[in-house]
Amino acid sequence: MRYLPNGVQMSAADRHTIEEIGIPSLVLMERAALKTVEAMHTHGIDTSRALVVCGSGNNGGDGFAIARLLTEEGDCAHILFAGRESSLSPECSVQMKITENLGIRIFTEIPKEEYTVIIDAVFGVGLSREIGGKYKDIICWMNEQKCAKTAVDIPSGVNSATGEIMGTAFRADLTAAMACVKAGCEMYPGKLYAGETVALPIGIDPGYFASDSEVYITYDREDIPRLLPERKADSHKGSYGKVLMITGSRGMAGAAYLSARAAYAVGAGLVQIYTAESNRSILQQLLPEAVISCYEEYDGKKLSSLLEWADVVCIGCGLGTDRTAEQILEYTLKNTAVPCIVDADGLNLLAGRPELLEDARTPIILTPHMKEMSSLTGYPVSEIKRCRMKILKAYTDRYCVVCVLKDSRTLVRKKGHHPFLNLAGNSAMAKAGSGDVLAGVITGLTAQGMEAFESAALGVYIHACGGDTARDEKGSYSVIARDLIGGIEKCMSVKGMEK
Image 1 (spheres, rainbow, N blue to C red):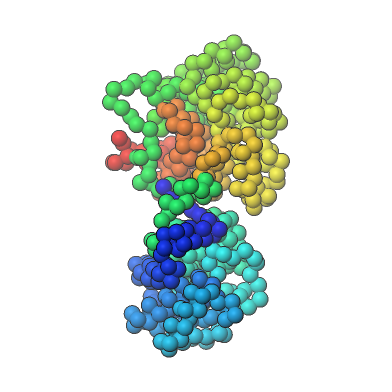
Image 2: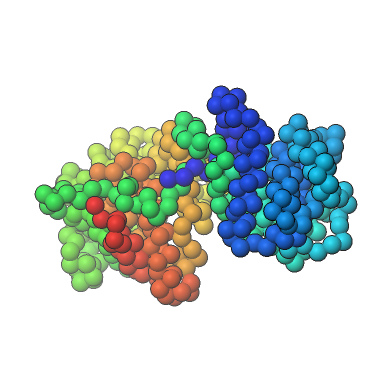
């Protein structure tokens, strides 16, 4: 697990390290410069003729120190000072004086020379205003140069919290982040400007963020074995949960199949599909491992017995939005005593019945894409994209649910937990049925006893890793939803993942 702080959160960690731990700011700056130089070498960047563009703050101080270290190594390093001397931070002033004493060339206007690398140390994480004037001209010039480009901590112009572009931004090939990669470098469009990101240890302990539940977390593949529920030698199908999938209206057997098949793929012990009678035959052929129960009209008595049987319920995949579907959803949310995952048509119905969430007496996981989130909250999609965490936080605080907000960077949030930001996955997954697979994955993990937030976050990540595996095998265009299940199975069967 990794933390992805924003600028404000990172500044708090800086202060803690300096004031409470006692590591001087200049020491952190020296380490930042040293690690950035090492990162450029490791990534094969030619530093023989380097231009470091420095601002007036501590990010600029990092830049001055980088120029000095490169000079000490025998490279030709010049500095373009883009800031104002009247605004120099104390540490930046010290570093600037050292470079002057060493005779390192400092420009205050854009130089005419050519360089092998341009290093951006203009603003750092503290930028809160749109870039204009002289700074905009300099950054545009930096982007136009035909050479390698490295950003120190974060590309200048990228909002550290949201990934928004503040007027303009530096386009880096490599972003050398101090202690942790910043959230804005992993969200779009900021990710497109950050290039490859690498977190550099400089003496700030990422564990500081454990107590701040607003800091994002993310997973890497090596986390999966630790997070998966245990498979014990002395066990049976009942040990891994009884799943009730309330899915598939007439003509929507595919959604029922994909979600149920995915639940089995991640380890659920027994899956029963409650679906329209017209789907019985095809589902029995597609998934003989599942129990098939059917309805032709609303049957509260039958539904009640199924809910009593289940350890977890998934409702909505291809369910439809007619009166029967609405009755089934209402009864389920009012009467189930086990965790419930609501997807697709279940969300469309829920948008008109938000009081059902207020009355729920069991953990609820919602899995909306942007348009479904718009229906749930009343905000337009454009507003949700711009203020996704603010809107997601308000919604999950009000209803106390786990919400999986699906997008190219899916977010998972529950009140009191670190929000999970998914960094895996790819555009090949943008196909019909992908959401059904995800709902099934989360349901299957929940069936095995995982807490709602943990199963949602891990489910999102495993689903995305399965998508990456499928893309690697079939390319970006030809992947379909069932390929995601195959990719998930391969990811989970990699040596070392099984306990």
